Amino acid sequence: MMTRDEIDIKQYIDEQLEKQGVVILPEMEAKESMQLITYLGYKPAMTMLDPWYNRGVGGVREDYVPYILEIIDNIKDNTDHFFLWGFPEIAAKFVDRVNKPLAFVTWITWFFKNCPSVVRGWRSSQQACLHFATATAKMYPENFFNAQQEIRFENNNMRFVPGPNSVIEEPLLVGFCGKKEQTGHPSQKPEKVYEKLLLMSSKRGDLIYDPMAGSGTTGAVCKTHNRKCILSDISDEYLTLAENRLGVKRIPVDILEYFLVTV
Ligand SMILES: C[S@@+](CC[C@H](N)C(=O)[O-])C[C@H]1O[C@@H](n2cnc3c(N)ncnc32)[C@H](O)[C@@H]1O
Image (cartoon, rainbow, N blue to C red; front, side):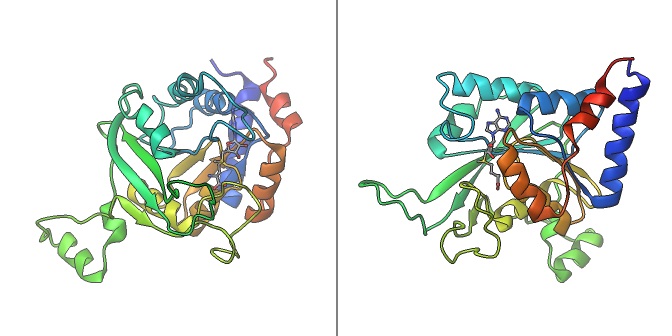
């Protein structure tokens, strides 16, 4: 049973969500963040997980795949849609391994031609995003309709409902590409890429969650499309980038700790 103070933190986050749309939690591990979200009873329509690539912040882990699967287990019962990012050779390892009630829906490819890599060999030009969802999760292809299609859909006069393609072509944020969007985060995703995932899996007012939020791309797209959003990340530095980008201060860690003290 939740204590009085625990109910307060939920109220506090709810008020912040109403007021500013985006809530940034203090820096914390993704698993811890998911446990908190679950404990407070939040059920995000969509959860975005864009993990570090086994180098940089997050470090190098021998047990990378089981570790990410363990993280996912902490949110699997509470979200309708779940997107997992990775390079194709990493993403492939997860296709059949995410636990129920989530089930694999589709493999999405983000294709870009402007990779600045000078490594001799194949030039990387894609990243993968795996879509998982529960059996009852709703999809929103109507978010992509043009005016004519909207009318046909409303009149029940559409034999095939077209959704977006599972290949998204957008340049990497590098050099002059997406210059205004760049925050300095080393693996920031373009908003245009996240936008499609968001529109396919949610409607206005829905709650979206990203526990490895980096520079806050998920939050930026949620603001544009009127979704509520909870973000966290393990890095103080990257959360500062997200704060500046979204114009939202994170919840101070002492407030969170104060509220979560059991009375
Ligand atoms: C690929 S980046 C996410 C980039 C983000 N999608 C964006 O567009 O800015 C991965 C993020 O995971 C964070 N991270 C690494 N290990 C983590 C962990 N155990 N828990 C939470 N966040 C972690 C890193 O700090 C990094 O910001």
